[in-house]
Image (tube, rainbow, N blue to C red; front, top):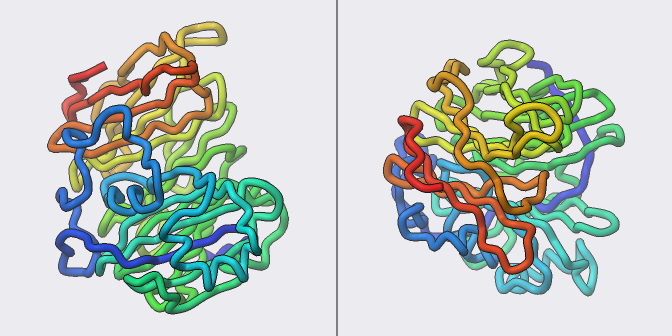
Length: 342
């Protein structure tokens, strides 16, 4: 794959955090460790409420933990020596964040200012939140039209950011080595539209990228060497939705992947559902078709991203209800397609 470069605004931190076992290549083990499983996280608290909680619950089997910081967070306060000179004082909250786990007891955190300039910034922080290296422009040199920054880990403590680029109708990746040096840029996927983006690291296989637009969604597996694994055009996902809802990705086993997404049972005016699909590493579905996990009888944001918690043979997915005072919509799906909770 030929390199592809882009410019946007984000902040990435790699912070120390005690984690579970590591595999022989230095990446965090795929089996459950100290992060919470579906059976131990209350349904109403599937969304992390702080950066520390998101870091503690980061898990290689799911995408980045996402959230919004409305005000000062203890971890960022301890890192004020690099945060404030870059973002300014006061820090322009709210900040959107993403958290993924790395090997060696570290985590990567992506921050973006939600209002005004997003202000790109990258730092590697040690276990005491002291900066090891800092980059003022982590992604530079690309035309306008960049959106949907999404964070993922990689092999050997590498960190990646994926993004949509409207100027080239593509999805691209930038990869940094463990010392913060640029490792590679990848042209990952060409799409007609990319309104929502998801990325999941699949140890020893690469990165699953899923781009959603108004007319559907497409997924691609980019190998650790930057090669297309599911054909040059990727693999389409067979469902429609009332909005370009993002996909949520999770590994239910080391060899299989589940997609969750909001969708419709038919054309305009038909019922909305939370759908799921299970694929193998060859990009082929393992179920006969999309599984209608739950019909949505309460209002939800049509752009909502399901929050997935891995468990032993069962994945729990939650959607935040948009109705005042309503609880999250929570379902549990087993690898054989049996819905154990809806």
